[in-house]
Image (cartoon, rainbow, N blue to C red; front, top):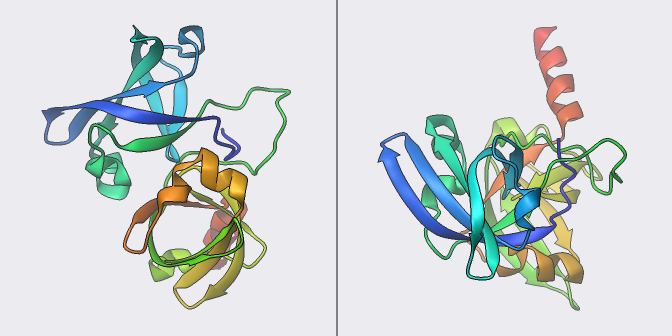
Length: 201
């Protein structure tokens, strides 16, 4: 589990296409090497992935993850290239502060930025999502965009808006978003289960 509080921005260093449906991606980061455990989980722009290798090089650390068919089909990982910036978060430990909301790292789909409204030191983003995901969003509810825990401001049909504060614009990849960009979206787990129960009725 994660909290949606980004603790580093990594950069893709290498993408190795091992098969059509399996890519190995190497990401550079500022985490200490001993914090990167092979077999452990890490959230990369909201995608929970498993570290398969890690090391040190050039004064920093790196880790490698494998992305398989489902991840490549459902997330932005299929478009990652050397130089792509990704939001990073290590998994929550018992006793850690829960500063955002519970995030599983299981991406539900993509949200597309349709408008960016600059405010004083902040930005308001309007995003469009598939209708089956839009019904799981509610004003004042939680959502994770590229692994960042945010509060939904408004919802209208298949679009919703969020306000990005200065700190988040600075320390995450959301600061570089522009209309036409896609982000990984994970809806709040409670909304997902409530919708499932209502469908069952």
